[in-house]
Amino acid sequence: MRGPQLRPIVIAAGGTGGHFFPAEALAAALIARGERVVLITDARSSASRSAVFGGGEIHVIAGAGVAGRSIRRAAAGLAAIGAGVLAARRVLAPLSAAAIIGFGGYPSVAPLVAARSLRHRPVLILHDQNAVLGKANRLLARLADQVALSFPATGGIPAGRSTALTGNPVRPAITAHRKSAYAPPDQKINLLVLGGSLGASVFATLIPAALARLPEALRNRLELAMQCPAPLLEQAQAALAACGVSARLSPFFADVAGMLVESHLVIARAGGSTVAELAVVGRPAVLIPLTINADQRANADALAAAGGAIRVEQSEGDTKLAQIIEALLNDPARLAAMAEAAGRTGIADAAERLADLTSAAIAASSRFEGAKL
Image 1: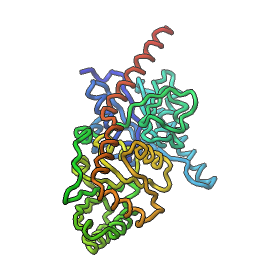
Image 2 (image 1 turned 120 degrees about the vertical axis):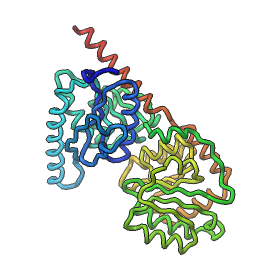
Image 3 (image 1 turned 180 degrees about the vertical axis):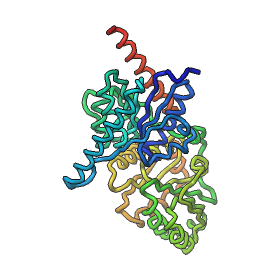
Image 4 (image 1 turned 45 degrees about the vertical axis):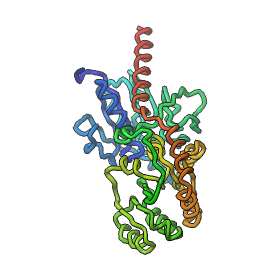
């Protein structure tokens, strides 16, 4: 095994699951190849509890956006980013990193911007997990040497950027069930509802209201597992019991992979990691994008265009959602076709592809540096 003098590969990723899970999967792939990995993250990070990053080299710096309509908030955001760039440069300067891979969002801004000012600049790679680049990633893409994409047709990429389709790295527990065989529902119907970090509060009222509109015979066949915030658990459980739906609710499910495999239909937000996991396992879904997130709408549309999902707007309410759920659950052949279509889009080896891209970019940069000497 190579020693600590090895030039490290720095991963820049925020602490939320959508950015952190892909970063963790890539780190595991790189470490398995004998690489030294350093994580730069923000205060939300759970990296110290990570099986991959925990006990490793972790640097926490400030990461902030420029969200907000007021000049004061924009100025505060820019000042925070400026402070973050200085902090990132202090971390990066002594590392002499071979590459930095940013996983998007504002926590990636400071390290990638800081890296541009280093005397020995590392290779800069940006990974985007969505079907359209967000505001921060459109900026970062202009700085990156390579942009790694999760969807074949990703929107918002600045002209002239070098891109590669790697897919979105997912957790090993998910890849273990890649393209798992799908059995359409017979008597019992396993319905899985995943809310994501911002979506579960709305789902706590929307899902019970929609299920209450289903025919009684269909409700009696449901076995529901639903992600639900703790303060809303009792209310949601009571609403589901009132309409005769057997339900297991929890703020967090440890075995999402196993639950995905057993599910007949998934209702979820459309974050990049969620869509990638649905595709790798191959399960039909009803996707309800966050209303404030154009990225999620693009993700949902990409899987829907492939035939693996149906997009429903939150504003369409429980009546529309109930109609779609009823139509799908009464058509097992359609569910099976959607599962197969979703599976065809899954890229289970995304972490290895991204690791390959990183290694190739480092090698190319080394050859270029050697030619200059």
